Length: 171
Image (cartoon, rainbow, N blue to C red):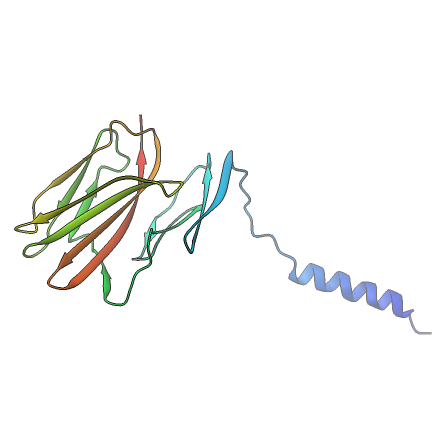
């Protein structure tokens, strides 16, 4: 006696669901979050999610646990990342003053832009560094506590170097 076709179909469906249906957990419930489109880029963020782990960055995006933040414009061919040996940005988290300590060889143009989580430009500044080592400060005292993205561009001898830094403002 053969089992009914319906029973075989039910067993096959159950087996395929248990084999392929997996959770992407652990799941986190956020206090708030949104998706914002600016130009051709989509920014997704969550507010109220505890963040732990490492931040990874490239010239075109910053990836942190729970947050994907593309930079304001995409990297083009010939754009290289700024290494941690070339630029130190600290302290992070920052309370009042953020320091940029460049260690570039020779003169060039340093430009930074500070964005909030909604991709609104908060501050922007460009300066020509004569030696490539002039320290810069960014006053953060007037900003609310929260997450910010700092985009730094270094232009020298026809080449462009770009990096992004996720900053946490406290107090």
